[in-house]
Figure 1 (cartoon, rainbow, N blue to C red):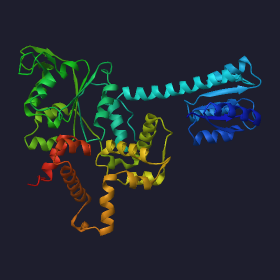
Figure 2: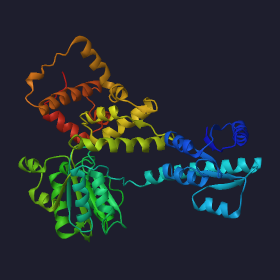
Figure 3: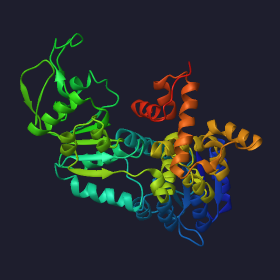
Figure 4: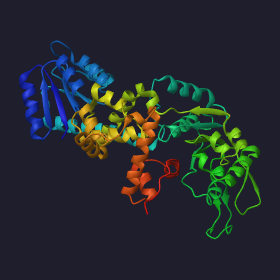
Length: 459
């Protein structure tokens, strides 16, 4: 049901408009002056404003200007008993949707109200669709680390220098890659993405370089590889640390010579590609372990950008959380909810093992389950509901964990992470793919954790 605010200093006009609009099943509020109206606009989400022009305390044109500053997409229908063409033109220039003279014609009023509401819905839908169509989101944060990344992007993007982006899962490596492409001279061409961890090692070469028809059993037709598809643009190799050594050798050759050869083919194909790579692994350790080529590392790491963990920039959490809140509420078509200060402090105190991705999921959960204002109690109750029962049980029975056994916070985090992963694996009957989806991390990353903590399925 659309919510309409009537602003008019004549009680008879307000009562008449309210009666007409409520009969049409609109939700209506009214007020007799501009300052009070602006306070209501700040506090509430209205779909339409009907505003008189000549009023005491504040002129209707001032209310229009101030109201649009508060909510830029809010449609105003201006009403006046002294209507002139000049007044209508002025109202239109200031952003009014339409102008109606007093006494208003009933049919024209209702048609104008309907049209204004339809336009507001279209504006909202367009914004949502544009955001969904564009995968490049704003890089939020004012921390030193984020400012440094933004500055590096501005300097590096216009060049063709290769960039290696490091950071934990969910920290925003893909977003950095997208901004490097968007601000580059190649932004008119495509950004082609390849998740090296999601492609089996036996298929990665075909994915990157393409294949000729009949080159292997399932090659029923020729396929163009990602290097060729990205020619003239940017190729983003995500989770490069999971690429097989044989594929690494071919990528190195492609970077050296700017040429590729399809699997099963003999012809060398020229490619003009800027490569951006990302990984959540320490590639220097992978090199020592023999899992990654040192020469490829040096080819990729002309510029190094490290994206910090969310816990390393906690001061950015309020800005990011409220932005997610505004965005998700808009997607759901509901009034924007506010996160109070205590709730923000509770969010800042959380470990955020899943980084930005986990924060967004939590905000969405809080929006669905909380009232108009999200409180610290909501955060504790809903942020991680799967942990609610164990925590309550521990509080009742007494904690059996000896915290003195941990010499630092990292040791405790590893201890908690190991137990959490073990619990999820057992819950999912050791289905690694399902567990990885359940806890929102890459399957390859989960395998690494299982190996790190020596987790084994009970016989």
